[in-house]
Image (tube, rainbow, N blue to C red; front, side):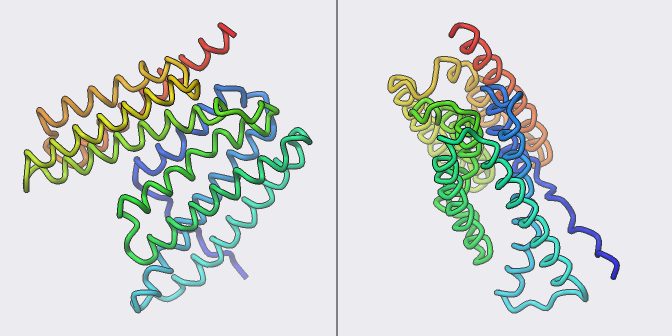
Amino acid sequence: MRLPPPPPLPSEHGAWTMLAIPMVLGLFAGGFRSLPAWLICGAVVLAFLAHYAIVPWAARWRAGKASPPGYAPRRILWAAGYLAASGALFAAAVRAAEPEARVEVLGIAGVASCLASIFAAACIRGSGRILLAESLGLVGMSLTAPMMLRATGQPLTPRLFGISAISLAYFFSSIAYVRAYGGLSADRARSIGGCVLAHVAILLGLALATTSGIVAAYAWAAMVPPIARTAWGLASPPATLRSVGMRELAVALAFTALAAAGILAALGAA
């Protein structure tokens, strides 16, 4: 029997960006030469693809909508394949990890998987854009970095979660800005005010993480592009959603480059 073609890849730049940032920064923080770190990256990407294969079908099924011929088997088959491959890569990563780190890697992965499952269930129910569900999904995604770093043998300390913290600062900044942009035409003052308050909360959280030693000072340099994007985007909103997306992609690249440079500088100083 011929294998049906895979479902189309996710088209949203934001989804791929938020998947990639913790992985890329985790590699810069010590994972480039670590086989377990690379295996975890592969496992996370495959789990991400499984989500996008199965959730659209499950959402249609729950809503009682008819699916085109072959739609359900194709998506179920590929989701199962992606998950099986993801599990195999993750098992190989755990086996290759430092022996004393394996239980903790499994624990971090368990929390991330639980949060991802909650987000997937919310998407199936049509509530994936609710802030709580989206936030839980992003927290789960950010845990890729500490999972990778613990597999390389780095100690399980609060500093291990520094990349998660800085990644979440960017994620929540992006969400706050995009939602504010969407509400400008309906209530400009309220949208701008809410976005400003959200960024104040993000920066206060980042300050707490810095003073607690979870993240280093490089985090503040990395946040300059997101903050500048927010100020510019609210003062002079882009004309189209496509422009918002392209601008956001540039901001994500600048954020990642600055954060990676800060990580390398911190490693060199150490």
